[in-house]
Structures are given as structure tokens and as C-alpha cells.
Image (cartoon, rainbow, N blue to C red):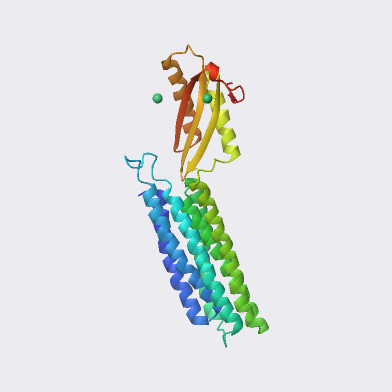
Length: 295
Ligand code: ZN
Ligand code: ZN
């Protein structure tokens, strides 16, 4: 089992445990804010399962039907996660409105809050693991899951403060107001997750700094060539696809030109993990004199 897959299974387990704990907190307290928190956890379970599916599909090697690999499955799951996050926010807003117009007669604070804080600690720890490992493995699904959990932790802290304030001041409407704030935070994180995934599905270019790094690797390893131009690179989940034109002297043998290509490909592969390089070789009259200058 790959590391990413193990993390994805871990997420499902953590989400189920936290859902159980938060449902208990709501049941013990009767607080709308705590209910909004528990509802959000149902979404956590769904997103963790979606991430698990995506990480599994993305790990399947390229085949005849999908010669570029299956990496983009992760973006689908991340978009789905984003949509689920937004739906959860809408549910919470509705509950907040109901609570605002007719506040619950009484909120039992301590047992509910205690249990909820426990859930947040578990969530916070797991979120830290997911964000760190997700970034290292460059897995959009795990990153989306981690970011989602982070919004969950932020919401829970807000809810805890709100419920305490509501009880201390006797203003029970604070409970509902806090739930609405939680919903706004969740909406924002949902939008972020969707935006990043759509960038991946649209073959957004890699960040400028990464492109610059590739340029210098090519310049340093293309000895014998004239120049390189039309460099394009995109991420598909953890994979990176790089392509460019390499201008060589017209009389250079195919053998020699191929050696240069192999050298650049090897250098790029040590710089960027899971990278696929495609090079189009051209004679010198195709030079653009504006591309990458060979050092
Ligand atoms: Zn060209
Ligand atoms: Zn070759």
C-alpha cells in the first residue's frame, strides 16, 4: 500500500471517530453551534472517502486507455469535496437562522464542550499530518482533505468560544450567530478547494518559480545544443509533464542530439519527482533567439 493510500485510510478512520464524538457533544448540549459542528463532520466522512477513492485511482499506472496516467482523479475528488463543503455550510446557515429566530431554551455547556474540544484536538493533530504529508507527496486530494479539516478546527474553536460567551452573557442568540460565522468560514474553504482543483483540471501552468528552475536545469545540461524554447509544464496531481523545443546544429547526428535530450531528461527527473519530459528537436534556422540560452 502506498504512503498516500495509508494516509487516506487514516483520514476515513479519524473522520468516523470525530463524527461520533461531535454527535455526542451536540446530544449532550443541545447547542446549535455544536450541531453545526457535528453536521460538518458528516461532510468530513464523505470527503475522506472521496479522497481515498481518488488516491487509489491516481496510483493506478498508465494503461492503454489512459496513457498519461490517472493522476487527475484526485482533482475530481477535490472538486467534489469542495461542493460538499459548500453544501454543509448552507445547512449550517439554515440551522443558524432557525436558532436565531427561536433560540433553544437552554444550552448544557460543559459536557458538550469538553467532548467537542477532544474532537478538535484529534482533528487538529490529523490535519497537521495531512497537510505536511500531502504537500510532500503533492497529492491534491490529501491537501484538500487537510485544508478542509483545518477549517473544521477553526470552526470548532470559534464554536467553543461562542458557546462559552453565550452562557456567560446569557445572550443565547450568540450561539446561532457563531454558527453563521462557522458557515462563512466553511464556505470560504470550500471555494479554495474548488478553485485549486479547477486549476489542475484546466492544465494551469506550474508556478513561475518552478518554471524558472526548469529553465536553469535545461540551460546547464544542454551542452552542444544552440537553445531551447517554448517550454511548457503542468502538474497532474503528483505527476509533472514538461515539454519544449531543443534547437541543435542542423548537421548534428540524431545520436548526438538524442544524447543531449537524455542528459536534460535525467537532470530534470532528479530535480522534479515523477516528471515526464517530451523534447522536440529542431535545426538551427528554427532558433527564436529569445528562448533558453545554453550555458
Ligand atoms: Zn521551435
Ligand atoms: Zn530517447
